[in-house]
Amino acid sequence: MIKEACGVLGIANNNNAAELTRLGLFALQHRGQESAGIFLKRSGQCELNKGMGLVGDVFDKLPKEWWKTEGQTMAIGHVRYSTSGKSTLINAQPFAVEFDKWHLALAHNGTLSNGAYWRKQLKRSGAIFQGDLDTEIILHLAAQSHQEGETPWKALEYALTKVEGAFSVVALCEDGLMVARDPHGFRPLALGRLGDAVVVASETSAFDMMGAKYERDVRPGEMIVIKEDGSMQSKQFATASRISHCIFEHVYFSRPDSLVFEDCVYSLRKKFGAQLALEHPVEADIIAPVPDSGTYAALGYAEASGIPFEMGIMRNHYIGRTFIKPSPEDRKTAVNLKLNPIRKAIEGKRVCLVEDSIVRGNTSRERVRTLRENGATEVHMRISCPPHISPCYYGIDFPSAEELIAHSHSIDEIAKIIDADSLAYLSLDGMLSCASKDNADYCHACFSGEYPVKPKM
Image 1 (tube, one colour):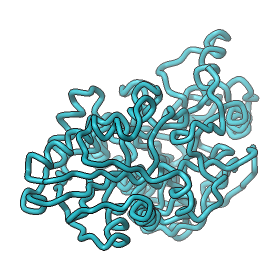
Image 2 (cartoon, rainbow, N blue to C red):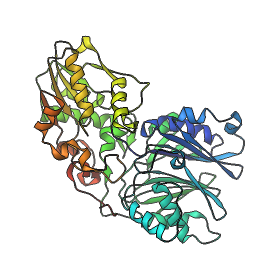
Image 3 (cartoon, rainbow, N blue to C red):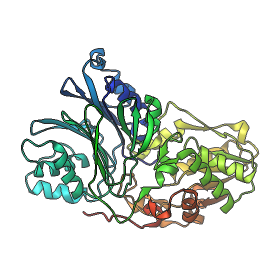
Image 4 (cartoon, one colour):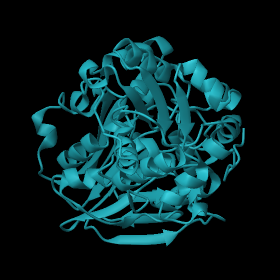
């Protein structure tokens, strides 16, 4: 029941930019289900369409004329969850403004750790905000430095040097398309090709949907301006003392068929499960995942332990991720609608249930209860990441320590609260050892309390 802020996508030098953006956003739907939008450049003019709901719901309402390929050259798209800002249409992205003579739109994935500070300062200087997005802060800062007649890119570069925290952004105006990533590289952003077209996306699964090929990641602190013909200009606008990729992207958020931070998510999740089996073996009859995000760690655990893998729980794929629901009551209903035990698979058996994380504990307690009601003689839980003990300021929706059960309870206490026969988590060292990069390349503040960038209020 965790939210992560958004997925972004962009394409340049393609006369079917709108439709390809729509297809790519379908592949990023797991990153945001509250709203979706596309900002399109056609025949030198820019057009915005966005709305509340899923990608299909938003864009199926558009007239057929909007999708005509004539004159299309560039587009950016966005799907959103609200980790900062309310879930309203005014906060849907891309966020478009008139910027000097340009029609400029910006789409953003991440959270600014000094966003509250800059919002306060900007309001004091007379800035007027339409919504409560971090995206608006970037645009207001850009407006302060913009020189008349210049393209927006220099002003946006200035703004991005002033903000801190997590941002992977795409922007579009009549002059071209810009992509940039914060110098710590908290959130993913990949660069690819589709023939002569340049594409960027939060995850490479979007490239697969579009038929594009992955080339490389946008580097932390890199800004790329892409022209209508696909030509690119790259510069390093900022650097950081260390790279801090979000390790939780691999544990939970990203699709298993994506390359994220140049690593295969599927393979890493299996490694997490195998390492978990080595650290915390169990006497059980079956290994069962909490689908879908726990499935691949459970496969790794089963292979390493030699205990049979069973799909002991069935997921209703017509129900979205439960953390989309704004209230605890809505979330509980969604949990029960989404997952249902398969009695024949678990009845009379000792079940080891593999889950990706425990945040508040409510969902895990429900899972254990329903397994026991359906005949499981024992329920052991194994978690493929360490306990969440600290809030995140970089784009994950558990911002207060009070919401995190592991912040104030021991593992034994959590086991009693969720009524599990045993509970064990993957160690931080074990998790980092599974990743191909040096440990310093990952942010693990939610597990360790070690923040690469301190929030500024």
